[in-house]
Each structure stands twice: as structure tokens, then as C-alpha cells.
Amino acid sequence: MKFAKLTASTLAIAAVSATAAAARDEIRIVGSSTVFPYTQAVAEQFSSVTGAASPIVESTGTGGGMKIFCGGIGEGHPDITGASRAMKKSEFDLCVENGVVDITEVQIGNDGLSIAMSRSNEFDWDLTLTEVYMALAAEVPVDGQMVANPYTMWNEINPDLPEVEILAYGPPPTSGTRDAFVELAMVAGCEEIPYIHDMGSDWAEEHCARMRQDGPFVEAGENDNLIVQRLNADANAMGIFGYSFLYENLDTLKSVHVDGVEPSPETIATGDYPISRPLFFYVKNAHRGVIPNLQDFVEEYVSEEAMGPGGYLSERGLVPLQDEPRAMVQDAAMDGVSFTAE
Image 1 (tube, helix red, strand yellow):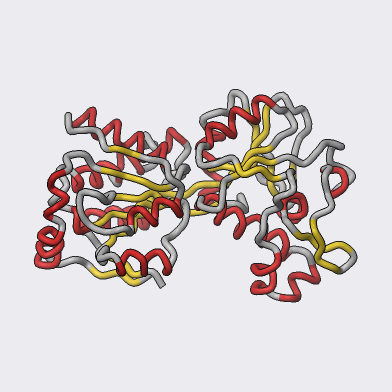
Image 2 (image 1 turned 45 degrees about the vertical axis):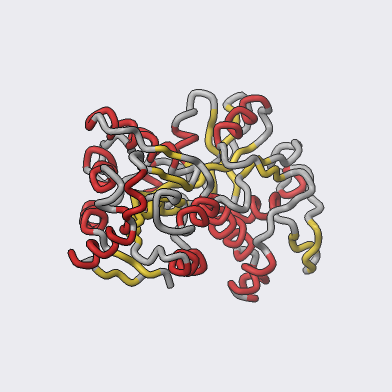
């Protein structure tokens, strides 16, 4: 990323360019279903403390949120989008094409991608990344050849696993959670197979990234609460979602360990849990000073009371940044530092 601090004159010009946005009183936010509960918590706290109109927060998925956010400037376009991955260059280019040229990237913390099951399942699940890949990929290596995934039972992949059908509910392609899971679990698990590792990362990214579509993996939409409901209805089903949804449902769900590591705030912060990722929101700087209370809302979001250690977002499962990077993020968010995706 390239960063540049906005000058007062730049902000003034941006504000003038967004005068049409002044017709809207509520802050409008779109984006990631994973970031949604954190943003919703900040919106509720902000409205309670200030008495201002509560921001409108929509869960559209990371990819869908980027398209909406980058659609333009003015009252018809959102002010902020949440993201469970960094903005892609193609998305940034779309923003620029539509006049959204000054954007601030804010990393709110870190998250683990949990694989979870109902507590009524009695087996102590611990999967390697390769086993996750072999269960859920569209194509897998069999006798040195990439073929359509033939596995329908977990014990076919590893005889030490239960003789139950493979069934996992996960996010759709528009989700940043899907993007992160493909990169951190599927491709990484594929690359751990020795002869594929020798073929290189580019080959693995091309041949190992597709999720299977023949039944064992089910796209469950952007509402992670629906996945939780399905897991509680089927003891053998697995669900893939952000750690916060596991954290909030530990009374009924348990984690599947990955490479021997349980997801927790500690293992996610250290990177010991292998399926970990940063979480973001992006602010449209042209709307600062024009949409009422937008700057104040950003200040609340990056406050120590929200995203700091022991803050109310950590109580919902967010893993806070370390002190120094968190201070840098807080300053950049408040000063309107712009970035360029590369």
C-alpha cells in the first residue's frame, strides 16, 4: 500500500465534490458479514452515547460491499465498507473510475477463520490443512493426477477420522471470508502435498482454489447465523465463518482444531492458528465533513474503548492489534490518510 496524508485543502475540495451527500442524515455502511457484528456494535454504542441517528449497517459481503462502495460519491452511495480482506487493485481501480479517489484503509484487528461443529458431536476433531483441502476442493490429486474429488466420507481421507459424510457450510464467492479461506486453507493445504509444493505457488493457486460443487461443500450465503442454525440441526456438519461467530456460540458449538491448534484470541494474535487474517473498514474521505457525524463515528470505531485490548469489540471476538500498529491505524483513520492498492 502507498499512503499519503490529506491536506486541509484536499479535504475541502473533497467536501465540495460531495455536497450532494448532505441530503442524507444517516451514515450508511455496507460490506463483510464478518465485520458486520463489530460495525453494528459500534453503531449502537455511537448512537447511544451521542444521540445521533444510528448508522444504517448492511451485510452485503466483502466483494458486494466493494462494488457498492466504489459506485460513486454522493447521497446514493455508502460512506464506509467493511472487509474481511484487503481491497484488491481491481476494486480500487473501480473506485477511481467512479470518482472515489480518496479512501482511508483501517485495520480494526485480526480474526481467525473458524471451522466449527455442534457440541453434540463427540469426536475430537483435529484436521490438517491438507485434509481440509482434500475434503472440500473441486479437484484433488489421486495417483499423481488431478481428478474430480472422489471423497464423500471423512475416513476415506484419513482412516483415523470418523466414518461420516463430508458436509461443510461456507461462504459464497462474493465473501471475503471465502477469499481468505481459499488462500489460507485450500491453497496452503494443497501446497503441503510434496509434489505439488515442488510445482510452485502459481500452479497451486490455479489448480487448487476451486471449492467443490457436488454436495459436500454448500454455499450458505452471507448470513453466518444461518450456518450456526444448520450446525445445531446436524451434529456431523461443519461450518466455516469468522471466529466471532464461534465465540458468540460456544454454548452450542465447538471448534475443529487445525494442525493441532485451537482458534483463540491468543493463537490468532500470534499467528499460531494457521487460518488467521486481518479485518478492515474503508472510509470515503469525500464524505467526511459532509455526511453528519461521519468523522465522529470513525473516532468511536478506532477508540481504545472499542478496538483496544479489553474493548467492547474484543468482548465480541475481535483480536486487537498490538499497541504500536494500533496507534498508527488510529492516527491514520482520524487524519484521513489515503492509500493506493497495488
